[in-house]
Length: 194
Length: 336
Ligand SMILES: Cc1cc2nc3c(=O)[nH]c(=O)nc-3n(C[C@H](O)[C@H](O)[C@H](O)COP(=O)(O)OP(=O)(O)OC[C@H]3O[C@@H](n4cnc5c(N)ncnc54)[C@H](O)[C@@H]3O)c2cc1C
Ligand code: SF4
Ligand code: FES
Ligand code: FES
Image (tube, rainbow over all chains, first blue to last red; front, top):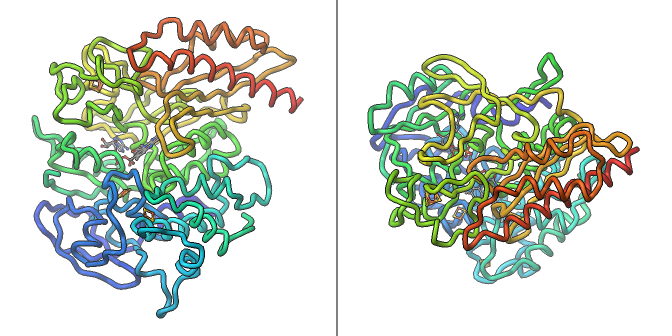
């Protein structure tokens, strides 16, 4: 697969204007959980604040607002990012999915169910970010992307506990529910091969 | 965060032109890539750009082979894509490893090669606008000198600044003899990686030798450093998602116990990714023995200047160099 295809997925779509210039509040369109959302924002508004304060999608949480905790994790064109360090305007034309977009017609996403089954949270503040992050992790793993603990050259690398720990290190849990989070991931994806 | 004008570039030329057209004396304009450093610094009031030129929609995001067998990596390739790229994993595994040891999966999905090179220091006092900092406010002093300087530099420091360059990726690029291609108002040029970042000297406010308005378009890796055995080892306060206290990247070729080729660089110890040229010189052509590794590490760190909080880094750097070279020697032995 050519790499450019992966990188440029949202950039190659046509519903964004070239050479946009603005300082003041402007109307932009964001594609969130499959729906087109119009919002009026200044360019300095982060994607996190746009989701929470302008679109009232408060599932995505603000922990540190500086990229250090993962509570704000959302999916953009299937890839997990920290929405606190993203300017909303930069993500026009991209496909954004938040925790609110994971359930299917009232049916919980298997990971959401597993977090309940395995006590994957205590206060629940980090949970939306954790769950979106696992979804992104599994896409990366499925594409064969390595982590810092992947031994290069090994065929059929497995989603071991060591791999899960490393790949999920961008999501902190202040309550320390890590054991439950690990078990929830195991419940859904245990033994998965790359 | 101050408000700013947001501009979207469609290619390298439009990016350079937009930046130039929107730069006025005293009011900076900046390129915006992944935003993981710039948005953070703007929010903290350390960067106060009045115009941001978004370069993420420029076609500078591919990786391809060069005619001489080297590789060209676009400045807008995301760190995660670069680390996963089959050509990087096959020919320059040190680069893949170094990237994967930095930040988190989410941040690597956002961060770009150009932004990673141009990221600023994580010195606490640089980040705290109530502190004195010669890098943020030239001439104001340096609160790190007598402050909490556990994370600070031991090599190439100046009385003005002891900040480190925080990148892991750049340690690999330094070791692998990369070249950085830039374009700017005065045209295109290429810089050897060792000349991209600066030592602080009397002007710690200047991080790199890029001229104002210059855009990194791509980074080249030469054929000469492809396919070497390599190890990246990062020592930090927790096992993942933390900046390096010390890191060592090495690529080596050993023939019959003799070191034929050696590329060695350190992170977390200096204002720039530190190419260990003194150690390399001692090791090139020498036997791959632990005595020689220790001698080389000793020589490389001989000029280190410790501060109250970071003296431990000198011993840590030596031990990490020795450990990495020993591991590589064992790997090479197993291969032969
Ligand atoms: C919590 C946290 C932990 C981190 N941990 C690590 C770590 O362990 N190791 C590590 O190496 N890094 C770490 N990072 C830093 C991260 O790697 C950098 O923030 C990232 O690489 C910057 O890339 P970017 O594309 O987001 O740059 P941006 O934030 O978009 O830009 C950074 C700077 O580079 C300039 N710039 C960007 N692209 C270009 C270009 N093409 N030409 C010229 N100038 C350009 C911008 O104008 C800006 O000044 C961490 C960051 C955070 C927030
Ligand atoms: S070490 Fe450098 S960046 Fe840190 S406070 Fe001193 S001058 Fe500023
Ligand atoms: S709120 Fe974004 S990483 Fe903490
Ligand atoms: S459940 Fe409370 S922070 Fe994770």
